[in-house]
Image 1 (cartoon, rainbow, N blue to C red):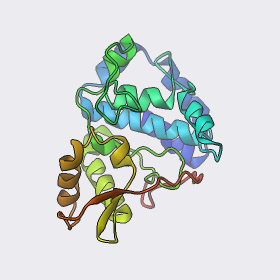
Image 2 (image 1 turned 135 degrees about the vertical axis):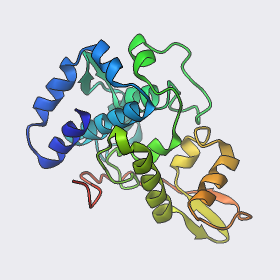
Image 3 (image 1 turned 180 degrees about the vertical axis):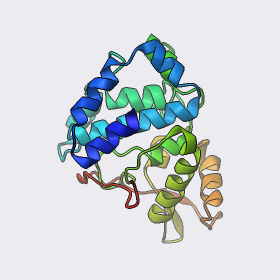
Image 4 (image 1 turned 135 degrees about the horizontal axis):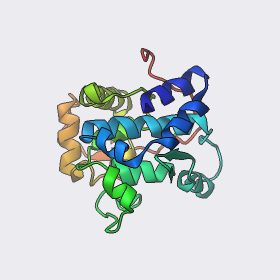
Length: 224
């Protein structure tokens, strides 16, 4: 259902109808449908990306106003109004605090969050979520049956396009700093780079600035 919502947003068709279907979902049925983390990741990634594009969350406003946008409830799933922060940090990052570098969590998640969040944090979701800025990865529609392969492909493509060698250092995306704990710390970042064929293990790591220039509708070229 979330995948259909995202694709309807892309096609410019009746996305509002799909939002109403998401809103009317029964919570017990939703919990039964989210049988594992593959299902949870696919659904929440698609809801997040669909909501960003549907509700024009991308903006060139100042950072404080931009952060308020992420905290505003903009989409309803199974009767629960959700913000982008609630989806990303509560459901996809298992109740981790946005500004905790991946090390600090919320010890008292809501019953909805506790029931529908992932069991294990998968840092690759950071390469699938698009908030409408130029430094975001392109948007793809995810599905539970192949989400692991899709996330691996998204991670590889994003790192290969964004990581650079600058003055003897490895310049990596800011996402790796913001959520460094999700990636397993500095050593985890180096393991990630190595797994995706990026050389230069003795070089220091530098974190690039994030480009917040609005860049809506950046879809993966071969998405159907």
